[in-house]
Length: 305
Length: 333
Ligand SMILES: Nc1ncnc2c1ncn2[C@@H]1O[C@H](COP(=O)(O)OP(=O)(O)OP(=O)(O)O)[C@@H](O)[C@H]1O
Ligand SMILES: [Mg+2]
Image (cartoon, rainbow over all chains, first blue to last red; front, side, top):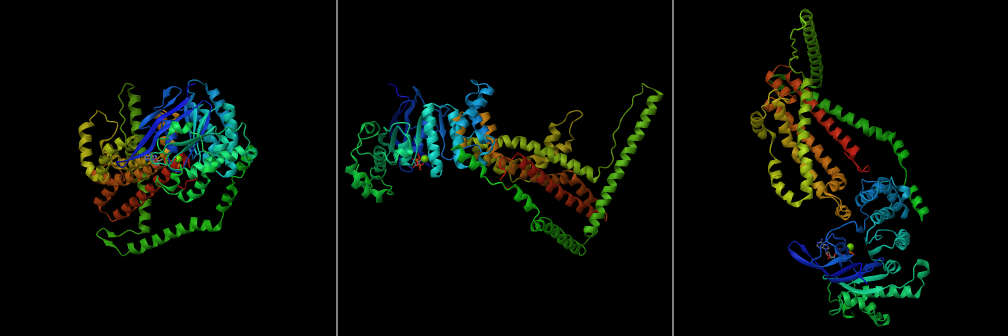
């Protein structure tokens, strides 16, 4: 089968005041259409950078991204991004914020009336049709994030990219938005890459969880398939042994194996690599708690990997 | 879920009534009215007391009372001049009517009245000139500022020019502007007076910089995420400027415009004085040369008028800024 979205050998080097900083090295990832993938990893490891490269906002130094057989060179509405801090234009009403995107993308293909309906439809999808004339400063953080999602959905992107979309929200609002997102994704079948710091969120929403090793020269450490049946219900899953096990595996990766993958193990191989039994690493989890903050790649926790 | 959302919407507190009530708060009233009045009274008293101690070659320095007399004098002169003009026009009309009655083919001429411009005429001239200069300057400054803000290379190219010309006094520009205008602007029956152009261009050269610099800073400082949103939507450059850049930079552009108008108004008076262009500056200079016992009082009237008009121009810009600002919460002052 042809991959819908493919990152192959992606690496990037930033030029900061003359000195080079290698943020990513040899990142390989393949996504199928309609797949929901989470990116998880320690702060500063390069998750946003990966997302920005897929979005076309950054250009990879080596390797590249291919979407539906075409190389990604520029940003475009087929790869809509939901930014962490909503990024609504503060001078435009909720309606106009979505309209800005819709008018741009469907300028030719939809009539004025059709665009109006489409904007309202998308706002209704995220339950924001009641506040269309409000300015962003007049609505809550969760509502802003909903509008940001509506704006992206309205562009009918091939891939929806979300950079910690719910990171700034309280737990209750976050849970609501996660449920909304799951529902919408089930209905529309969007292909999604979502960055998160929340292990539960990753397990609940994803088909696969991509765990990144620490930078510099970060890459994909492990990929964890999540085989939980959909639709998923957060309350029922909380006690589900499979859910608990997956959660445990992600935590283990983050706290025990948070360094570079050993030897040549990178991207492709990692994808295939089976996750070793949890029991063998329990000791490492306990040991490495102190090492979490340790910045250098040779930290004690790395040895376990 | 939608329940909680609408609750959240309703929970946004409505402070309108409280705000209205706060308006009637006697303490606030005191600080809004009494304190400024007190300040003005103290100033007038200090002025009055110190003025009576200063002797100049043109007599005593005018105090508030003498200045008030001159205000009335100037108003009376203005009315007299207007009456004269009306009478002149009336006579002319009658003469032409008689001529036409005697011979319908006769060629009638209409000469407009050329009396001495009064104080109030000079104010109008000054306002028109500063308006023209301000307009010219900002028609250049805002687009150029947007370009400099959007493109780092453009900024690097323009920045040295800005830095060099920004501190130049209008008086240094004036001779150059005068020479260039008289060399290049030589059409038959010109639409604008040369003196008017000289002052307007000098003003423009000086009030270009605040808007240019502030627009550049405003455009450079746009939230990166908003720019990225625009890139993801693949907005065309013009739409990007119209929908994202200009609204985002509006607060800074207006800061620039206000500074620019204030600079322009200050520069104008100096330019008019030096170049003998009509306007308030010329009024001051003429009175100074005139050297009658009333001159100092009349100059003082001009000084106050300049200050008040400058203040009002700023208020005007502020009102305009409040109208176009999207951030209704921002405290503008
Ligand atoms: N434009 C840039 N120029 C220079 N360095 C950059 C740039 N963007 C990112 N970096 C560096 O690349 C590394 C990865 O950054 P990135 O923002 O992708 O991390 P992240 O995983 O998203 O972190 P977080 O979870 O905190 O958002 C960091 O060390 C960062 O300093
Ligand atoms: Mg990030």
